[in-house]
Image (cartoon, rainbow, N blue to C red; front, side):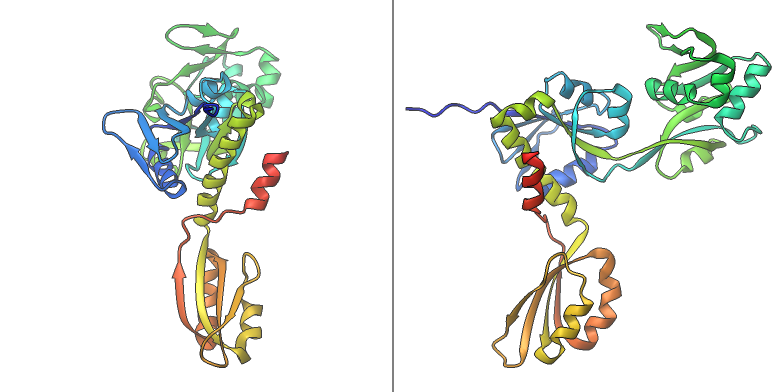
Length: 330
């Protein structure tokens, strides 16, 4: 009798700015990651996972609608789309800030003071952004906006539709090169930045920080309720969390005399208790442990005085299986 055929878990990964970092973490999570040129299909060494590359802006909604079971996208796009998905792992790469900026010769301290001045002068305030929902929400929370316009929604302007009743404050959809639009086309922008250098080069100053974002692994809520799919989804979580954790630690091996062992163990901040093994040479021990990368250079001066034969590896993955099991059971 043939066993029941398992349905594949559909996995959407981002193309664009998150693409390179995503492939790096996939390559640490699986032993084979194949991508054929000029296609959007990616093949892992797990036949039960089907992977496709898509724009990160689309992924939250596609996962929420059940077209994909899991996906990787920025937290900024999860918030922007208001997608009803489960965020199951912060992947800790693709760190960006969503900010408001306007020309550096403008005298305003922030967007709130700009709204107030434009309202008093009865000038139309124009803002450009890819993030229409986030921009509207942030603007409506400003004290000056509430004072002059109450609960009215700013006018959202795209080539195909207009939403909102407040024509005095307009948010225009940007298709890219947002930083090039002020001051001729708009008065301010809401855009993503890593360092702020591109904004400075375009003579813009950051005045408000809206949010910070990293890449997240998200899941469809119904897929998590499906027993078979849930198990495979948590296989994905296990491998990817292991890769995320592996980037933070170093695996070290070293030899130490038994008389210095206690002193050494007090100085090593280990992930768990170090493994200590007797060596063939009497009076010596081998110590095997995992430490944070940030602790390594602090430890070197101490280790070289009491230990020998230090070997250092960067782990591919660190799988904290007991924590993942607890998450899966909740």
